[in-house]
Amino acid sequence: MTFSKTIATCAGIGYLKGGGTVAAILYTILWSVIRPSIVNTPAQVAFFLLVLVAGVLVANRLEPVWGKDSNKIVIDEVAGMCCTLLWIPHQWPFALAGLVLFRFFDIVKPLFISAAEKLPGGWGVMTDDVLAGVYANLLLQAVVAANIF
Image (cartoon, rainbow, N blue to C red; front, side, top):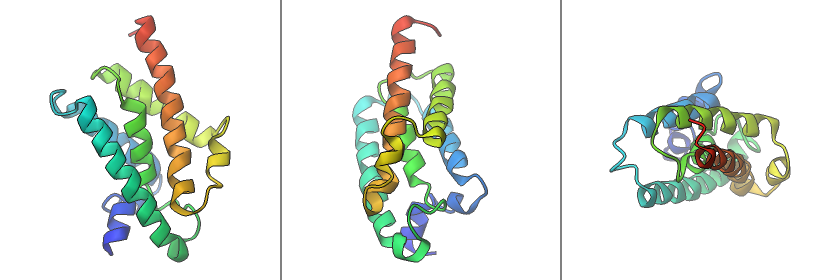
């Protein structure tokens, strides 16, 4: 497996059936079990930017091989979950709610999410999931502010 394929598939997760959901779940678990002192806002933002740039680059490189927005590419789901969990309290109920909200927005693609897929190359692959993550994060922020959990 080439380096680009390893990054795009998140070490092979993209080859699994439902790889996007698996990648989102694994990121959520990782976020949930790492100490909050490590998963602080600057670290999360830096990781998100790294994932975003890497995702755009590898998706651009693999589009001629796998076609436009191949379901093997799951780094976009990791980027979406990064957005979803930014500035969210480090607690399981929020992580699970974020996962459900992100997958909902990623699958249904309301508002401008489906339009974002039409962006060229890796930007289209990554942007729709980032937008799904932003929408999920906004709803989670409302839940946090309302003190529901």
